[in-house]
Length: 194
Image 1 (tube, one colour):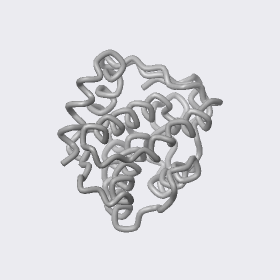
Image 2 (image 1 turned 45 degrees about the vertical axis):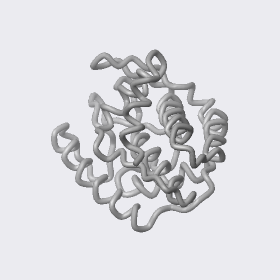
Image 3 (image 1 turned 90 degrees about the vertical axis):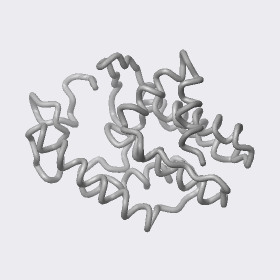
């Protein structure tokens, strides 16, 4: 992923995010991040951050997941970023538009449907729109996945959502393809809603 330079979120001359563990080597950071986020997700699923799918709720979920890892947990990114790697080319929304775009997106959480086809369509739209807003410097996939799972739970859904089998990189690719080929996202989400 490429970000506005210089990237104040990273250690100088590095692509490693400044972190509370002061891990500065890439492989160590990747390993530490995976162990950390897996543990936080397990805890979050037992003790979720409840809310009404507002901008504040989104920030609070991010803070709960990342507060022990980074100082900016729960804060929207400051700067315009883009991705250009591994055939994924994305320009995320302007950082000054994050709150308003997110408020518009969160209206979809009011449209829960017990119709599976409509539900799959809404999940696909939410996932793709959140990716394109990309409100946080890191942790966007984890936040939207957990919010969507809460959404299913709060609505006493007869369905469950399981995105755990997909990597963040795969979901990013699906979200990028959503623009040109929405059928790809639909297939992935259909397999995830049971």
